[in-house]
Length: 573
Image 1: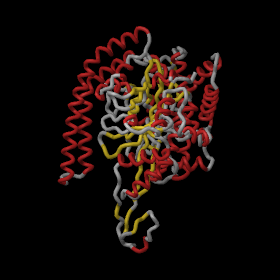
Image 2: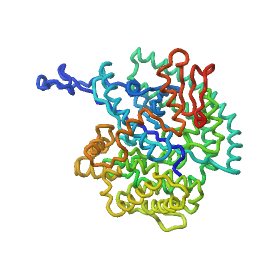
Image 3: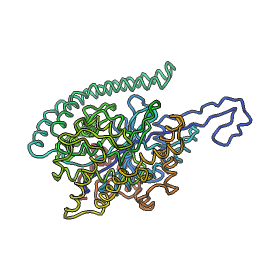
Image 4: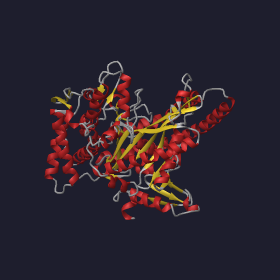
């Protein structure tokens, strides 16, 4: 119970606020502004987000041991001492405006996941001033911050994803899945060749951009955005047919029971796990979830980043195209009966209680689904309409159509799964402390939400943020209230961080345990061996120091002649 492998991916928005100059005096560094009262502030240079990411990773290397990840299509990646990783998540249509993505190491149980999520954030918080100082020395004067949120002021969604090891299929469905997957392999290889042709086009385009930059033919932002749109179109056009076919295969045979039996749970889960978001200036609508307004599908069919879905299989699609990077093991692993299911409809939680329950309740529901205990789970008539309707209802009164049942509210849907979980935990032969605590907190949350949600300030993010906006801004403009919305999520210095330091939020884990988790990996997962290798790298020089780290393996000494350590064999190492 609660023992399957689980991990979180979190995209952090980058905030760089440049200092300004007035008559030679820099605002933000104590400059005497009264010497130039009529001068116009001049913006200072601003670094690109990729440069900021690189400064942050160098700062991380001063805090803990790090190891290089395998570069794929220019995507930068670094693994850290506890087995987790940080990426630069480039936005295809805005190559200068990427995100910092952090991934926890593989964990087991909600307490361990929360512990490593907090350790990841503490590392970033400590790295920020170091990176900021490095940027200042490079001529970029300003303050640097990271926002752990899922929706920016312009309505773009990004942010959190959850990963759970689950059963893909069994019996005849697994056999048929493997047969059809095998038939797709020639098309996947053909797509690989086509993508390499696209890579040549990319190189030519980048060379042309470099020449254009020297000649000053166009503003850099315009060039990068135009290139981003062009390359995105080429890449998606080349891979769309085989990925659509694979998506159809998963829809028909993959995760079928789990998707059907848990969809109502995920749609209603934001009553506890939603981060809350002030949506638009005109209606001033408040949503329980930052992600909800961007969800436009139930299952992914394409690699297009504009596809925001509840159940995401982007990781499996990448494995299908892994020969592009001369890697066949991810392709072979697609034939395994257990796979990693990504939950795309997930908010980035600041409140520890909400973060703990997000993972804990989901683990229990997945355990029950695989045990065959959710055969009578509610089936929503119109899932996407239900998702949007329920999350736009802070009053928690909206009811949605359920097949063969009276309409149900989000709280009623959650109570169904809670009652099943109570029976599951009560009758199980062996129950973890986490499982009992999840059920207890889950019941407590639903009861308080039904009676008085305000009692959950400091425990549930959407309740906390809504109260904060109302008290701090009142009838102020939308822009003022939206700034509070976003500032709530800033690591280390945002409103939630200030509330936590003042004792207005519930803290589940003490700082000492979090500090230990910065350098110590979870012991019963593949992260243990990855962490040990990263620590050993500090003592190694020469060819043996050439390392490429991935989630499933570590190559030492070069791809062809080096040693390959497979992390999926971690129990025997």
